[in-house]
Image 1 (cartoon, helix red, strand yellow):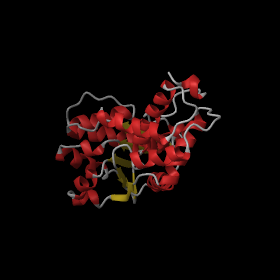
Image 2 (cartoon, helix red, strand yellow; image 1 turned 45 degrees about the vertical axis):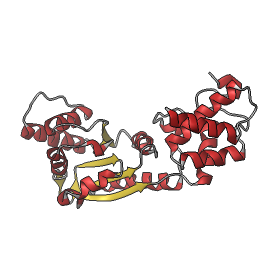
Image 3 (spheres, one colour; image 1 turned 30 degrees about the vertical axis):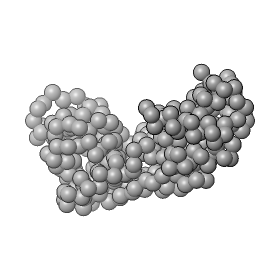
Length: 267
């Protein structure tokens, strides 16, 4: 709707986890590096936590994109609120194996066979579990622990990466045997003020923006209103661009940002 007014090729602030829009803040870079290390070293599971909207999902999708497909077999579970049998079936499905068995033993054997087959083909297996805080069945968490029994000598055959909100840390911490096998734990914080500015500019550059759209005061107002949370930044910027277009403004100032932030709170 507002693309022509602002001279943009496409919407710059959609809340979709497209890796091309990944912004490498200092913390996001560190988190990505640590997840890469967990995958490459095969020394256990890794856990990434952060508040809602802080960029965990886009980070995980960036990781998937950057893992060479000839070296890694990657499964992504986006909705892990499953029973133990459903959980194992979904992992197998994401790794390209369909099973009709309702036996956990059969499913574990099939999974072990699949990861061994991948290993023999020169591929490591990675399972990314997004929104892992939604695993409410203790038995499903127990199955997750059992997956870490897939080992060859001193190396794990499968690397689970748990992505979730802060409460995931408490949930995992309550299961000592599982918690001890998570070799890397990283908590992703919000963007700093200068990073918020850079984040917005990076997004605009990705859609071929050739002009200054947000004033310095507007950028400061966006950071204050969003508290540095990328999803909130996106929402505020998107509505600000819409309001600015509606008023035929040449640039977005703090007054428009404040109106946008207020409008979002009313939704």
